[in-house]
Amino acid sequence: MDNAEVGGIVTGRGTRRTGAALAAMLVLCCPGANASYSDGVAAFHVVSTEAGIRYWRKAAWQQDDFLSELRLADIYGNSADSHYYDPVESYVWYYLASRSALDIDDASPAAQFLHNARHDARIKRAVLLASLDADEREDARERIVYILSCRGASGFDELGRIYDTDYARERPDRDVDFVGITTDSVMQPSDADALLYFHIAESMGDPVARYYLNDIEGRLRGTGIGKHIVDDEARKFHFWSPSYEFYPPGDNDSGIPYSDECEVGFARGQALSLVEPELPRFAIVHALAFLGWAREGIAGIKRFQLTAGDDATGRLTALQSVRLIQTAAVRGDADSQNTLGVMYAKGIGVVRNFVRAQYWFQKAADQRDGAALYHLGVLYKVGPEGIRQDLSRANDAFTAAALAGFRPSMDQLSQALEHAADEPAHPGQH
Image 1 (cartoon, rainbow, N blue to C red):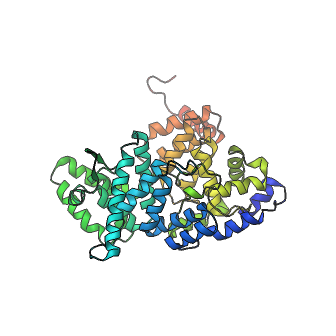
Image 2 (cartoon, rainbow, N blue to C red):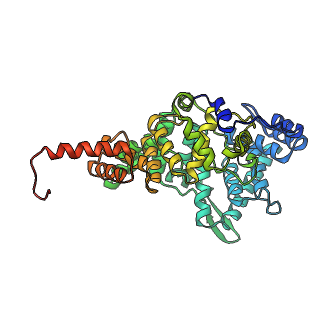
Image 3 (cartoon, one colour):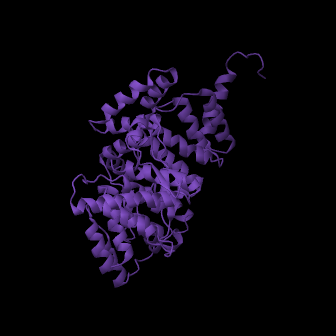
């Protein structure tokens, strides 16, 4: 399928002319491969607040830029500005700023400024944490994990050190005393989680991760439960994925304040190369319709692109097509959930992950989607990596799919019944 063709087929209408101001903003506010804090300052003053935010998000996300992290935290933490205020997002960036890698060992004025600024970030994150409820704290934790996972091996190494109980004791900056109340970070140390993240970092080529793995494994193997944890994490890290399909979008129409700045690595790039020839066009059309954008034609596609913080071209890229399916799946569309499961199972647009495929098939199956039930049956029957083979659950899924009217399952079920009829009867059969 030609993604550029999607716009024409879905819409059948001409591209609307965008205003000069919008065009200028799209050109000026969209950073390239690299971005810096100073780029954001310039865009903030010349174009708009959102333009500056876009640069600061990229610099903070991909380069752990301390000043950009602080600026984002301040913007999202400003309760006087309802357009951007989000205490969860503010906490996330104060947390990352408080752990940012800084060279502050000398006594220079610059080093002192950085030291004081990081200390202030710790205090501000403590103040925010005291106001977050349990769901917001979990949301903050998942956002932090997502951002760090997007930084590759170094990000997973950082996650491992955050969760390493020994390392946490050496750097007790997770605990801050605020007006007599001790507040804990949302990232609570856990050696099981530390093992998982260090395994991922090692698999991505981090040479230091093995040192941490040996240390934690040595501590845990002395007990029966510890040995089980070591073996379990060594097995399941292959199938890890973040809680989010993509970073939670904000309420702003442009999407820029909450843009997802995960870079496309080699494995993800390979998966994206399969989108055009393998992702069915009807799946994209359906996702657009579910989200309410199909009727607007090319204008609807542009609206979707803006919500992702992308240029409003009216033509979907491979990455945008994947994001479209993901968005519809996250918002509860059973067909898109099943499609996303197939994409994970085949490595189309997303890196192959059978555990994630099972997750999305189950989401759709919970809505009695026949195709998803059938695909769950296939997973349980075959038992690919990460999925335990379970023929009983497979048969149950195939039966449910047949009852839901899914034809391939009905054919398979009927063949199984015909084969069973030729065999000698067993007690209890009728």
